[in-house]
Image (cartoon, rainbow, N blue to C red):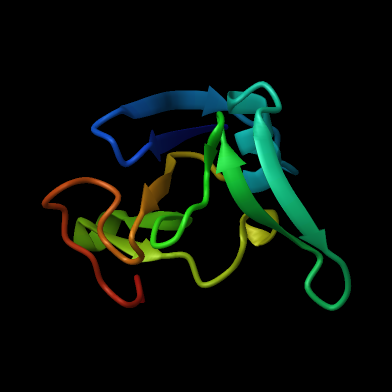
Length: 120
């Protein structure tokens, strides 16, 4: 299986990791660690959340009003949706497109791209 991941650093730098091989059990947090060679800072919140709150990617840290926001691409609608769950709860699947965007929430991870409330 392969996934496409965008990291948008909010300063005009956007890096695509296309067709990254992932195992059937990988979640997006694990994939992000892999893509950045572990250069992620996060706080883990245990039960009931069991989630990492990402505070920095590749040295770019959350600083109000800018934060790392997680987006899912809705292929059937050609639009982006803010993820309703954290990276630990997103199972990465084949041909899935995901983005991390350092931004003032909630602007599209790609300039000019459409957004919607739900892919459904």
